[in-house]
Image (cartoon, rainbow, N blue to C red; front, side):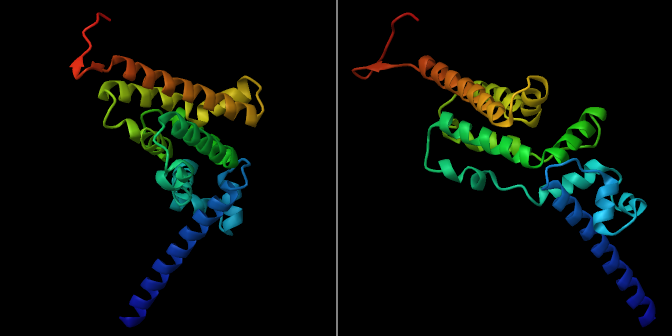
Length: 216
């Protein structure tokens, strides 16, 4: 009986080591920025491709787990603007941070996008750093902005602060990466500035402690 239990424990430990090796290989290849494939990951992990697929049903699920190990907390990512209450400055930092991260891992990110597009509405999901960064960047507006307007701003920024926007600028518009990032930052900050100004203009002003009743 003891021998059987020992054998069972050994198999469990071996499976854990194999899974860890596959995820580690995916993580290492992801950091190169080049295209990442399941055969390449299997070779790096010293396992067969069939073995890799036994642990992960597809490349997207493997990359999702590998990416999750490398995603920072939004507060950590935006540490450079931690003392700022200016949503425009914070959104600029969030946009640049995310897009530089995408560039550094673009092979894996492109694979994740492809999996999402080919299986819309399916179980494939992508790491949610984008939403977290946008929420954290707009934190100064949480108690002052109109909730509906703030929600719309977040949706608008999700279009711009994204890998899809970056690849559209580089692949379709022919921009170099630095120019593409600068363009996305410009668009994101323009959207944010306009929303802040609209919110400020819509707030009731006071004069001598009374509401300004001038027609608008």
